[in-house]
Image (cartoon, rainbow, N blue to C red; front, side, top):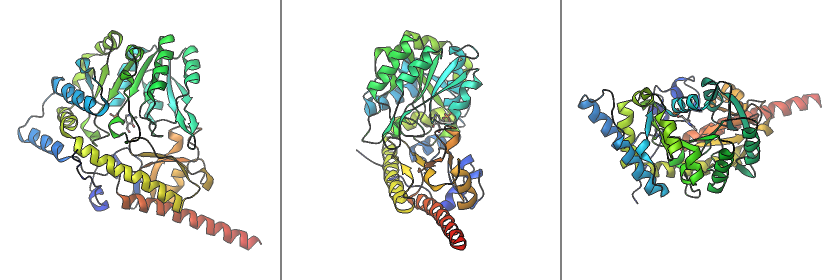
Length: 400
Ligand SMILES: Cc1ncc(COP(=O)(O)O)c(C=O)c1O
């Protein structure tokens, strides 16, 4: 197996980027929230994009055969899955795909289940489609690990919710849901006549110890009740090119995708399409290099926390580059990210945007960066806490 070496860019290079991650904060802040990686994109993708521009081939896109073939080959090789690419429907991004699906699946006010803490747009996408949000907390915790609370999902569906919006692998806890759990979820959804939308955008970044099984691969029932949505945009860092796609694997799912307005599929970017065809077709060695970098960084993060923030609670994710870290022991308030940004000049994802209750005292750290930036970020937070401690001790001393 060939592995391409993937290294994050230097801070100086990164500061020249104009994406939201690099524009949102002042220049002295290390930004580790927004889910994009600080690595250069694969050379093969740069070539495809350059050629498109060179040949003035940047009109409206047409056709799904190439993306279907590229994804099918990738899914077969990585997950042993014969992906049902015959009915693939492109969409601008995962967010738009979810809203468009929900518009077909629900009546205004119907419940949509999200398993919290979860990717903040999952709190806003269902309401955008007219749904009522039904948060169901994940079972477990940082020490025990998490799982889907199937009994609570069952109860929420029994109470009338129509859709389960699944995050698989899960952002922010990095859990790759187990096939038996997913098969049970499918049975539960089937009993209630509900639909499961499985967002699998982080799947290509699954680490070696976990096995990613696509929702549509777990059972006949899952194929009947489910549709999947995915994109190469997280794994190959292509979010700005705006391309994602939906998949179904049963007459029911196919009918749902066929009911989407034609415009959903045609509003995508030809550059996004070309880049993603190339990512799935020839981006394997780069992907493995990225996974190697992220694997080392998730270990490094554990070491840095143990050395500098020993009371932080962290469980290494099974996929992707996001870490859910409990800092509540440090007394930085409900939203430690706020104080850390203001006083340590490091931006983390704010835990309460992932769950207003379970996210209290938590941050999400994007470790898709260089070991140097990650180290500096944790050291800055440690320095803030040391200052706090020294000030508290001095205060105690003066009272004594
Ligand atoms: C679970 C999940 N879905 C979707 C997205 C974003 O996808 P898109 O930009 O295609 O909407 C993200 C980005 O972090 C994510 O974590």
